[in-house]
Image (cartoon, rainbow, N blue to C red; front, side, top):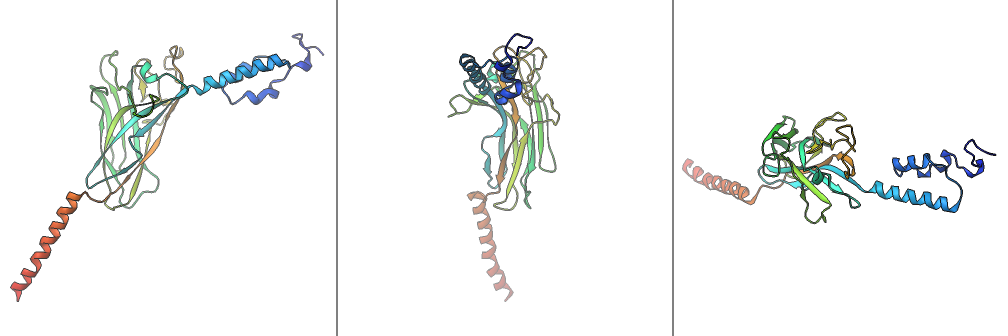
Length: 284
């Protein structure tokens, strides 16, 4: 039988019969669905080659996450300072979007206590924007710490449009594939019970789909939205695909007081013990 396009019906595969190509990438699916696949060896090899090419392109991407320097923190007697970063991870030879964009123009983050809350949890008592060189030296800062031990912050560079904000710093030992931009530093007061663990979750500042809180400097790509097109005209040539910033968690464990504090406590107890016999002797 002949189709309207002149090709024999038996040599054509309907779309549902080559659905194996789906899931590799949208681009691959469009490529296959717009083409008739003729059952000849050369055409099958060509189709498989196109699938492999699309798969390699799909794997070349950039991902983002909100992180701390270490996911597990043990406190001493006083407060601990915890740095919050936007982290960029490159795969399959992708270029750094942060480098292409001249860094961040704005950064936003939210931190909440999550999981099982101990009887004496650690609490955030302060949040400070990164105003050092390479950060946001002249920032417009909206940051707050709350009574429930959580905190939020959104900062952007309040300078001329050509003044870059947060700059990425390559993480040592990552081979150049992981970079971080420091957003905020938290001041966390540990709980009162030694050994208790408080878990915190770090996530994006806003709750909407496009909250426009963590933006690149040049083109204002929203890094909380995968493959954002801020201008509506497509991303700049050479800008790789990327996935939205994902949340993460970290813990603060109330540790044993530092040796100096423990020594002062023991010394105080010793003085009290030494005075008690003298007092009893006067009574007799």
